[in-house]
Image (cartoon, rainbow, N blue to C red; front, side, top):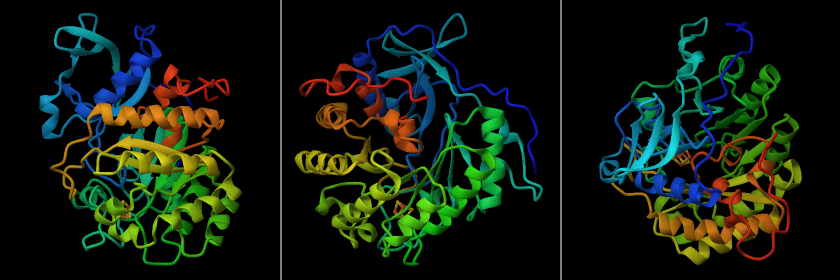
Length: 397
Ligand code: SF4
């Protein structure tokens, strides 16, 4: 199906003038991602998938963010989303109004279907301003001893909320609609790992190529380190803008426990893949998830992040968000103090090395909604460890 509706899309609600200092907002976002936000209204949320799920999507003081809203522990959160007399929304702690908020609207393209009758929202979701999809909703590690304990890739599939395999043509069609109807600014494509030596990189690359060709959006694709690193160059040759190759944790003992399949390649395999990827995509266009709250050693984590940064890799640090239905569903996110402690060591180092989310073309590290890092980059937290070695760019455009 071809979408011909002219571009008139909202790019998301914009809050009134900020009432919080940048550093206070960064701390609040970090707290919300650790404690969750009690809501009395349904928020657009994901309940599964290969990335952070249980993600209520909203704007806090105009900053796009995702926070836990549905897990059981959220009922104990001191933070609540409440309606204001004028019809707007705000985040409260007790009776104290902390920040203005706006809800992400339901994307218009969710009402469309392909010519074959597949709803667009089963092909790709809109994560605030990024159209995102798990192109292969199956993984060689799922359902066996290698399964990553934090992952929910099979949960969404089992619930019938998505289809197992999205084709490049489907994704191109939906990404164009997401751009034209809902103002998507980039595409984030991930995949379950395959048993082939490329681990699925070539397929997700081909999907990204089709999306870019049809929509013109910058594209990030995510995959495991391929056995043959030449695959990374072939993905770059497809015109992909950014890549995510996700180590998840720098603590080898934790990786072995939470992601035995990925641990088999060893953490050094990630550094090897990143080195090749930085050469192919450029410094700052390669990123890795670093999940906090799985029992990792803080110093090992910070040292690993700094080593990655030295190579030109953006460590996208997020608190664990236990996915309902995953093997970690009964855990809690880490306390905000632990998360903030890592942000405050890594973000200034990023700044000193001349990297920021603003320089990332596409994907999770560009979006930043699942982390407080971007907010800390824009606050004095980005400067705290020594001199401000570069002007932090506030606007990515
Ligand atoms: S490699 Fe791990 S995180 Fe990625 S899809 Fe497979 S089980 Fe999930």
